[in-house]
Image 1 (cartoon, rainbow, N blue to C red):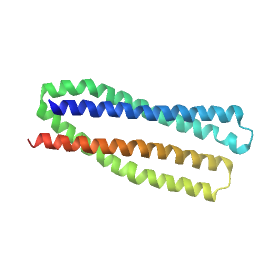
Image 2 (cartoon, rainbow, N blue to C red):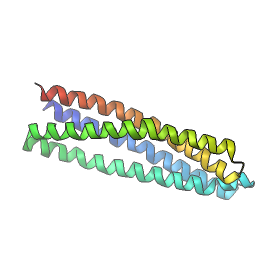
Image 3 (tube, rainbow, N blue to C red):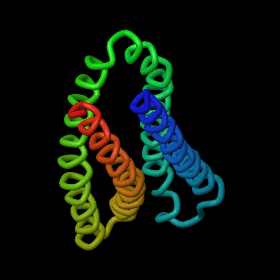
Image 4 (cartoon, rainbow, N blue to C red):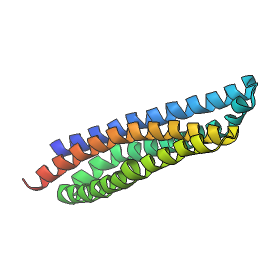
Length: 167
């Protein structure tokens, strides 16, 4: 029963993390509106669409994570009560797959995107491309910070699952 409690706590922590994506999405969209209403220079106006797109993407990610993990909170109890051994095995497989995705996307792809965006800022002297580069770096840093914490929680949860399986 302890593993069920840990699974629910993990899902609740993911729901909490999703709120950061949502909050930053709202901030990016607000910044876009601010640049639209108050931007006087060409550079300020060029931030409108990159910020709007980044905000929308962060909102979509945040809402997706929120609903996926909110539904897990209730389904965990049902699955565990149905067959605790099967529940643990399926969670081990799911966490291993997620950790592999984090390893690839968060710790390899996102740093490459940040470097590419930084090079874009350095080598292309157009306001729109600079705005795209800076906005991309900001969005990727947010994703990196939130997902690196999520990965750490997932690794800890995975180790508890393995301990439970071997008992």
